[in-house]
Amino acid sequence: MSMSNADPQTRSAAQRLHASLAARGVDRVVVHAMAQVPRHEFVPEDMRASAYEDVALPIGLEQTISQPSLVGKMTQALRLNRRCRVLEVGTGCGYQTAILAELASHVMSIELEPTLSGEAHARLRRLGYRNVELRVGDGYEGWPERAPFDAIIVTAAAPHVPPALVQQLKPGGRLVLPVQRELVFVVKDAEGRTNETSLGEVAFVPLRRLNP
Ligand code: SAH
Image (cartoon, rainbow, N blue to C red; front, side, top):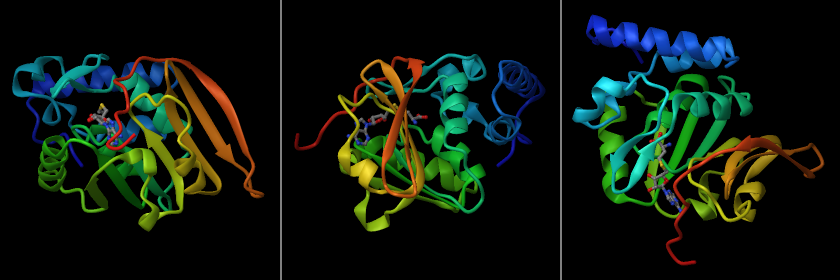
């Protein structure tokens, strides 16, 4: 939405971070979207001074807000535009959700922890995001009632690529997720065949299952 309410120090820290992401090759459109989102509003009060460092930070319940450069890399892989319907698994504090909402038409996001989902909901409303729908549940199964999606992002490490998520992708759809310690990118072609590539090594909190 906007950084306009931030104090000058916060704004210049944000500008430095976003310039460094651009310098490291994050797509201009994605950096622009990230620059609209006040990350300091998504971290606990006592972490605000670090909000624009390129690090993951704790958000409570042993969960973390992802590192900005990784958020940039994953968002970029999804190749979003204003017509896209996106599914996110792992709402957390809602930071990644907000960035997706800046770029896509509609974002649906699932979170296992009711507390985190409730806080993210209040925060995203307060910041003015209206194209976001949140749900509490196990994202391993996707969101069949809202499928199919142009893009799906998972922000917790899965043991393997969840079959339901691949199934809920449109032809031409993109899925990015950490599988154990590897960031995996899946594309579904027009015939429904999938192609998987690796985007490198990453560390994420584990995807937990409700009824494994
Ligand atoms: N995108 C988030 C990252 C949060 S960390 C952010 O920017 O803040 C990963 C999140 O995934 C945690 O909030 C965790 O509770 C959630 N999670 C773990 N397993 C899940 C599952 N099976 N379904 C949905 N959410 C899950």
